[in-house]
Image (cartoon, rainbow, N blue to C red; front, top):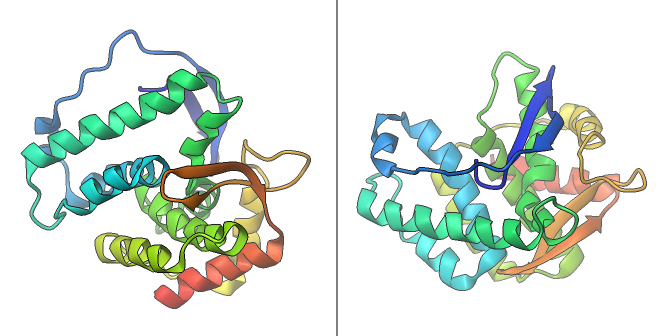
Length: 225
């Protein structure tokens, strides 16, 4: 609702048709989160982790203080408010995603492709679970392409690995995932495009890399599993 994107999937492809239709009002009450199973809570939480990483060290430190095994809902209420404000920050600067709003796609080039791949199989995967994988892969690329700090990279990856289920993605499926990436809406001039970070809170949009680097990132994730 926040940001106004409306989209539909076509077969297993994510958001192939869509538009912008901004809500008149958005009402959020975290009490309803208590009705959700753990995997759905974590799915939404992955987007909050993304927001923190593209915004500030302070937001990232706040995120790390939530214990997903024993959720303090008062603290989660604070985190949700902060996360909403971060998304509004980018949306209000660039409502129709012509520039800086693309920062919100961090973790989603891999994430959408992995989600499409799993949803074409029997297993399936939640959006946030795929985004968590995408964040790991794109943190790896951020280090490789933009020299993101190695110590911070492993700190973030450790946090994600502890709090989100790890999926095995074997190398024989890499080409299929790569082909899904070719459908990503951010792509420009037939090049697969990423929003990466050079540091926490410093986003670099329109980053490209070759197939070799993409497969290296998938290999890196596979080794974690």
